[in-house]
Length: 250
Image 1 (cartoon, one colour):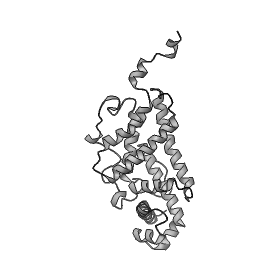
Image 2 (spheres, helix red, strand yellow):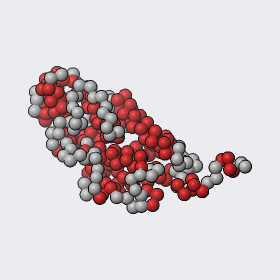
Image 3 (tube, helix red, strand yellow):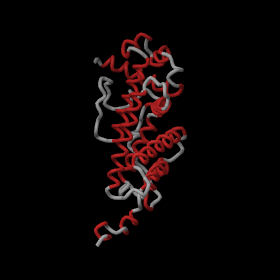
Image 4 (spheres, helix red, strand yellow):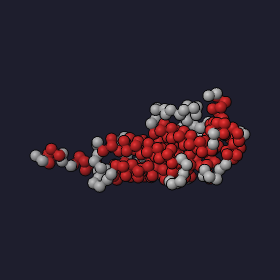
């Protein structure tokens, strides 16, 4: 694909994400997407065939960006969308990143100590994943609004795409929880699938709320979501104090 066509598709992606994220898919027309992208209406159909196909590819592209965010250094295949920086062409507004919004440094990542304190320890992997997820939401709020607005529409045209996206994210969270469970026992009655679902929901709600109120520091937002995981597992002290199975039967 030529660089010119790639640039056109990126402008269409950015325009569609912004408009649909604000108003929903049904309320946005192809004419509006074309006007916002600065192209003719026929260009939308030439590149995507229909508005539905544009939205479907937009969702898949955004999912690739999210997977990149959750796994730094591992680049997802993005077909012919044609970007390597993962910023949808940085057309401005809340779609672009100006200083590595997904890589968080600085004092607002500080934790309050105790079982949740620090960036390492048993919860370090989960904490890092949550930080990166909230960073993604902060960088791409329009995409997240689009995703959440369509996710639970029973008659939505993109349910197969959305269901696959949700399943991939839940699988990533579940895998991290399984690795944690190898070091800390889940509390009695806890189910890792439901814990993963709770983390998924909490991250999106907290992240979306924080994106709307930039005054909220990242650190407490991360710890609120990590607290869901911490509450589902025994504390390290209790794990160390519990007798091993071989000792309890000796």
